[in-house]
Image (cartoon, rainbow, N blue to C red; front, side):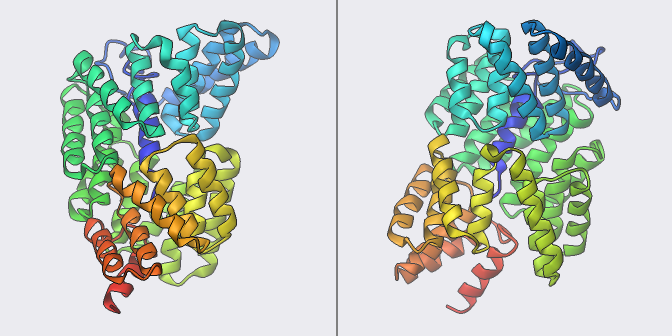
Length: 428
């Protein structure tokens, strides 16, 4: 399972708005509709300059206002780059401001956004409890509860947001994310398309529109609708060629359509800008499919680089990679168990089930897998994992049915495991 939900959750908070639903402007669009981001080509340079100014101020004085301002600019840059290092920098300086300003919403809310960006969902929730009359806090709270796995709390929160700003695409895309996590695949796609159209009608441009379009395209890919996903994702890339997430998703689609070279080329371009966990693993898998094992291993090592930067944010990714590729099963299980301590969503139980399976603990794997499926999931990989567990337990008919369902949901749910799934069905 790819890191789809967490990545979107962070994007909803920081790309769709500064801490929540407020617009991120660059001086001349402060009156833009909430949730829209119209990033000018020079925006990153402006943010970098402001960060430099306030880094110097914070270095010479422990003034909380300077710390808060620097943290806000780090979050602003994170909304542009998506770099985990920016979330870490924001968290560090905002935690300092929090020491003397605990309870101040101007500190608590951005600090919650930074914690969310690093998958500290419970830490974000705790900070936001006193501030839920603030729409920005409410938005992050919904994302944090969804990331943690408290679907009921997320649904209630998003319904409140809908009453406040029902026409805002940032609200609509949150509803799409909720539907996706609970198994409402078709509804999620409809809502994602609606969010894109709302953003377009409200005048979103560049990355502000590309974010919504990329999410829509990602869901189309995840449901195996590759031909529909192709123009949507290509359009997102064209809107902002410097924005990397649409390129990663487009690479998935190209590979799914049989264009391995095209997918590899795009992912190599993405990784030239820095390590990305999803891009590194998929690139390695595409190289494996093409027969270049040396290039595959070189790509896989980039996952270690990404994970080393923020281990707490990548436990699930690394655990799934190890289980997918039959490596270090003990470490895979340790990471999955740690992930479950920080969130109890369907993906956490599926990751644990797959790691338990990798360690030969099939009965325990069955229990965890059943929980994952009962909670609702749109992830085809979860059904493949369930099928493999069923086969290991001697439940052949159930296992083959679950594996068949995985391929029906997405024939290219994982570059390597989808091949294994087809081989198992062909040999049945």
